[in-house]
Length: 292
Ligand SMILES: [Zn+2]
Image 1: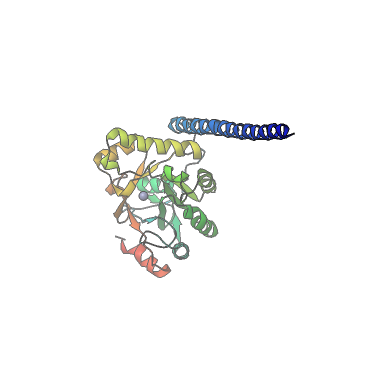
Image 2 (image 1 turned 90 degrees about the vertical axis):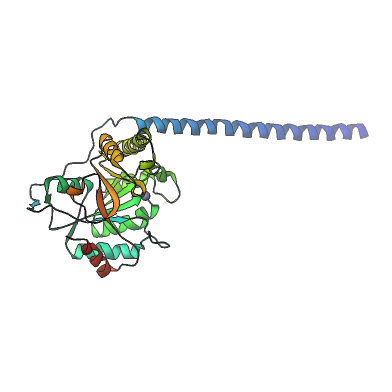
């Protein structure tokens, strides 16, 4: 009887051990293919982003027939925003951004797309008396969550200079959200390079890689011809300008203060930085303070 009980106990222990080994082997089987899958996906993405776009951009050229021509060289403000939130001198609260856009609307400002801005700069004609190009740098998630609804509400256009790497981070908008904004026709997504590194500190080959990989990614995924480069931290030199043009961009924006004009060069466009603390009237003063 005692022998029988002991062998029963041994059998139970063996069964349990067997179960534990079985579970462990199942778990390790599960993790193995997942890792492989992630690697496969990332290498696939890499080839996709470096491939040339295979379809023609869907976006159409603006019609300039009724635009106003000017004797004098046209200059206009390119506004520079970053995050729509609070906390430091680069963050503008969404409520203030709404006041700024409302001020522009009340004062009959026409908000330009990058394609329109390019035509203003190269033809010296404009779609309205008062024009402005609203830009955001970096590609924060709050641009999508806070800024996009305000732009839709007021039917105004803006451009987001996106760091491609940021589309995979927690405080950046995703590619899906970028597509949604781009498809609305109100928001254009342009390039702020892939990794946001200071271009003038890099070799020509490294700079070209940053410019090409980001442009190819946006061209392919948003079915567009990405025409604007925003220099990370505003850093560039003559080589950067030359390489940007070679990479297929038509314009580049800097962080130098002032109105944009063709005489500064299409790859050295100045901008008006918007800091927090401006209500509608204060913003109006800022807008016109650079006029000449
Ligand atoms: Zn930046």
